[in-house]
Structures are given as C-alpha cells and as structure tokens.
Image (cartoon, rainbow, N blue to C red; front, side, top):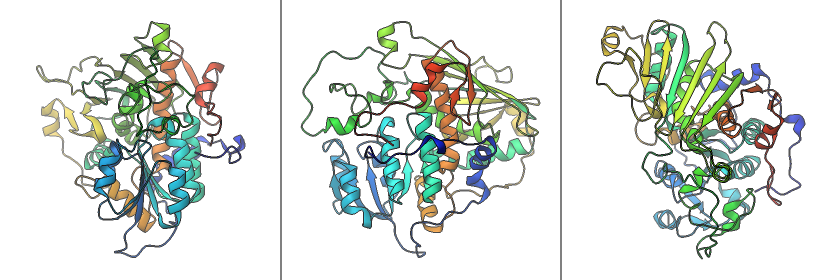
Length: 459
C-alpha cells in the first residue's frame, strides 16, 4: 500500500462527460499507449501475481506461456498450492517487498486480492510502470476506481479488468445486432443474479452482524496485511478466504461481484455512461446486520439519459434470486437463467446469460430464427479458455489496449458501485454528478464515495 506522503490531490479527480464517453469507447477505438519496454514477437513477459490462492491461480493458468517470476499472498497456506505450481517464482507475503526486490525484473502484475485492497495495490504497481490485470470490480469505492483509471492513463501502462466476458464473441455479436436495429431502440434493461444465495462457497455471502468471537490468527496468515486500508477489526475465519465479499468493509456484494459481468453487455452496446439517478430497496431490517453485511436480496433502479440518437434507458437490477417480470415474449415453460439480462427494444427483446452475453438470443425463438443476422463488423479476441488474460498479454506487447482496459472497465465499475452506494442509502433517489463524483442530494454519500483509509495506507 502507498506511504502517507504519496498522495494525489483532489484537483485531479475530475472527469467530463465527454471524456468519460471517449474513454469508455477507447478499447474498441484503437487508442494506443506505449508500453514500458518494447517486446519482440516471440519475447515472453515477466509476470508477477498478488493474491494467488483463489481467482489469481486461474488467471495465472492462462499465462503459463509467459515467465512467472514472482508470487505474493498474505496467506502462505492458501497461496501455497500456487507457490508449488510455479517453483521457479520467488514468493512473498508483502507485495511491497516483492516490488522492491523484484521490480526491475517484472513487466506486468496480476492482482486478485479482496476488493478492498485493489486500489492501493493497483496504484503501487501502476506508479512503478507495471502493466496491470486487476480483478473485477476494479476497486471498492468510486473514488478509488477514478484514481486507478486516471493513473493507468498517466503512466501509460496496459490494463485489463477481470470481466472476462468482455473478450467473448457473444458480446461482440450482441453489439452488432443492436447496431443493426435487431430489436429497435432499447428503453429498458432488466438484469439479475441468483447471488448472494447461489449455493457456491464464494456466492453464499453471510448475512450477519459482526462476529464477537476473537479466535487466534492462523500462523500462515498476516492479518494486518490482509486488512490493508480497511479499519482494524479482530480476525475471524468468516472473513477469509471466501466470505469477505458479503461484508461492506471488504467486498461489494452480489452487485459488485456479478454486475461487472451481467451489466457489461448493456453498458457497452447501449453506451450507457453515467446514470443520472439511482435508487435501491433491500431486505435489510436489523440495524446490527445492515451495518455489517450486504442484504439477502435487493432491487436497484438506474436512470440513464439519452445518448446521441439513443433514447433514455431505465435499468433495473435484481439479486438474491429475485427476478424481473416474466417477459411476454418468453415461451411457456422456458425459464429465465439464474444470472442474465433482458434488453427490451421497441421491436423485440434480447435475453442473455452472464459473463459477456453468454447464450444471447432474441425471444421468442421464432423471432430469433427469422432474424437475418448482420455480417461480422467487430474484430474478435482469440477465443478459448484464458483469452481475456492473453488479450492483456497481447496488449502489453503491442501497445494496443486490451478489451476491458481501465478506460472501459473503470466507468463500468463506477456505474456498478453507484448501485452498491444506493443499497447503503436505500429508499433514497440519489442524484449523481459524475464530474465531481458527488451525490448532490445526500451528503452522507460522501464517506462511501471517498472512504477514509486506515493509518499507513493511502492512495
């Protein structure tokens, strides 16, 4: 994490709407940044990874054609299997030590730590000129996301957010259909996730007050480093390694977890940009629980203004196995997927699943079969498992932005986190000023938009 003296002033925390839209489209518009050093066609990157016990291990598996030179995890047991898989890599508990000692030999860094540490770790790597692959959501707060986006631009590093569906063929096909007018102008979007009660260890978030027990910290874990910028609290096994997503201080809940996947297609193909207003209702009703963890279920409503010749859009998010109204176009007996979205246009409806418009179809199927699909107009990312990581590796070598660089992933995450903010301030219609990163009708929002970091940890 950054030292107290290494800060960025608020005078740099502005972003005009025009700059935002230009940045969001940058990944497909051919913006070119110069990498830290030039690479030959067959030269391999020297890659380090921070947070390698969970998703970081999967990210590394897609990068084995490169040189894996250093690995870092604050839990030597949780990261131990990955340490053993790459015996040639030097291992560390503190990423700052790793960067200090191995920095000259590192070209790029994969970061797959809990959400609350994304910004401080990512900023340190970016300022040292390292290309960065950072898991979704990009950061824990809107301010942190904005700072990472601006820092990546300033330091001219190649970046990629870990919403792997943005490298899929399906999301590009959806873009082409919308441009072709397949369902006419889109005015409504419904999106949903079965999380936080999906049944998997990483999605079954705890809905609870803060634990009162204070068990001993495992010898393998550096608890202070795991907490990072978050306010100190005693260790409890409910937080690490899986259930941290369900706590306000560490994760971003079901919306932060899945929104960067499920809302990605609509955000991109409809050029949504910043919403003007957002509000939420949730199942929270016990103050001690509501103060600590995300709700069992929520509904978040966004309102987006007209964009060029595109009409205003109302987008509604459902989680906790809540579902939108069943569309009339959906055939009897056909179910909505557990995670997915509906894009409702004047001439029809498109339904897709999670992770980059998987299973994208016009409904009903008779309308899908009757549709004369347009010719392919967007270039595809090389397919197959690990294509998103390899797209980032390609960007690091040739200097052309990856599919979900921070210029795109940053604004997408800001939109998602604004919904998370509405959940914390539920039953209030929040009016959003994106240029100044401020909710204009609720001063209480400021402390969540620009959080206070624990002493010794700052951007």
